[in-house]
Image (cartoon, rainbow, N blue to C red; front, side, top):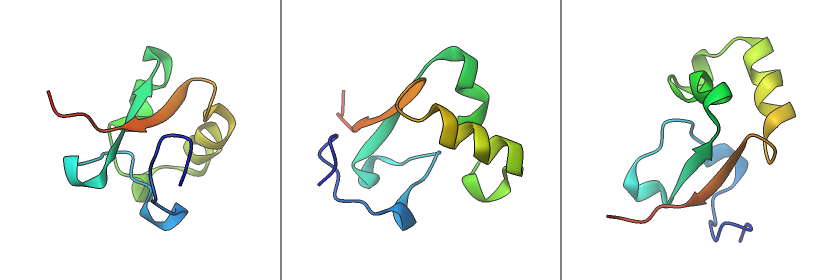
Length: 66
């Protein structure tokens, strides 16, 4: 389990999550553009930005239905 309560491994990480993924993202506005498309279509610089900013400007959090 991760700090956010998720059992998902790295191969299950999605930027555009669905409720059944069990998690979603909390992020600051300056990195919102990274969550507007799927990880597989990002450029290398965008992937580097994701690696650099995880835990600083965005976090995985448990999905809570409202």
